[in-house]
Length: 334
Length: 259
Image (cartoon, rainbow over all chains, first blue to last red; front, side):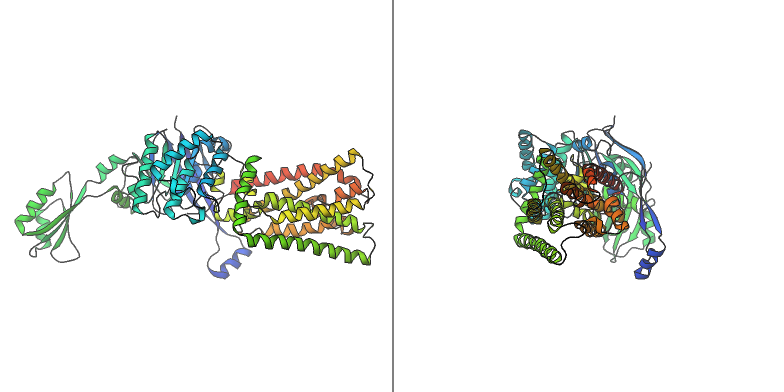
């Protein structure tokens, strides 16, 4: 049985349509008009225990709304959610013990309390016994270096410290399912690395993780499954590696030649590749399919036409694939 | 219960962080009650009684309102932040914790000014009782305590219900609740002096009159509707139920806020 299951999940927000300016607001007072925005549109999602799922999509695609629906913060307009077979609103308290949530943009720490006390209050809310709590804290300390920030008051934390403390806060009760919504936003590289290492340790422990992020480096090497949402609909749900194999097969060779070569000549000698001029003269970009030809072959062909001063091969990352999906350039099979 | 106090305690520390605010608030509430008493004394210097109600009985009504308000501020002041929390989407984390959302909201702030209202309110009630001719029996004392508790429950429930209206209005400030709170202040005077419409509002729609007037009328055995005071516990149960229902329904409408 899947641990997280959504069927036909839909959320429609109704917003007052006030037009622009003061005149619009006054008009709204007299004649109320609303516009409906479908934030999440019939999403079906099924996550097995222990999976690490990346949930990505452009801004406003409905990522956070989905996460809020999946943890019971929002009530769906249509469709339903089950966490471990439980209804998130009807069995709210039981569900709360099983899930952990982190919204990167928002803290759950107490503003005027030291981190240690915030975590202590959460321990009491979740009724975690002291021995287990100490053990968990020690583990968090290992990866997140929590010790140094425990005595710091909530409002005095830096962003990186806050995120580490919030991660601990989201996991203090040992949840089975963890939703991480933009957990690395605004962090510097060193902290990001530490946080990512922590994610991997969660996955290795068999905790189900759903990760929402704009930073695709968070996903690579952590999630095996990729779900892409756009305009409220899931446009892809499948294996991350296979996406890379099928769609990141393109390579770009950037070359600088010693003398000018007509673009037509280059194109004629490299059928199957796409040759374009780059911003400065004598520089060209050759786009080719790595399964159709190798970079070596491309270089050899070019070398017969002119002397090459410099060249470099770009390998696309999953980031490029997703960017091209967002822009509609690439259509992934469902 | 212990957890509730722990949550409140978390905010007590916040209070001490800003001690000037704390002192100003305490001074202001004490001053408010002193003004109330001076006003009442001036009023009753001109007239011996309003509709048969003496200075001491009206003082008790003022005291009952102050006490109920004080308990509301000291233990449940977070309710007044509900509008702001909804507007900002601050209930997100509350909804994923295994503790009633309403208690997380109400424990979100500790209004230390409640302490001075509790003290002055109790003193006013005490002074009123000392000047009354109540024939104390154990039964009457027990009923008195029950009525007092019910009165406090009503005030807190009305605070919650009126604040929970923000789930529908999504205004960032508790304007409606505050306006109703002001209306509730009318219940510090004997209900019998008001026109029928106002009686209906304060006695039925928003039963503020059960915080002070009715229970005190029963205790002092004064006025034509003294027996109504015995209904106070029922009214309290009704108010708690309604407030909880409104809050629960409201919570289903909660939309969080965009990131």
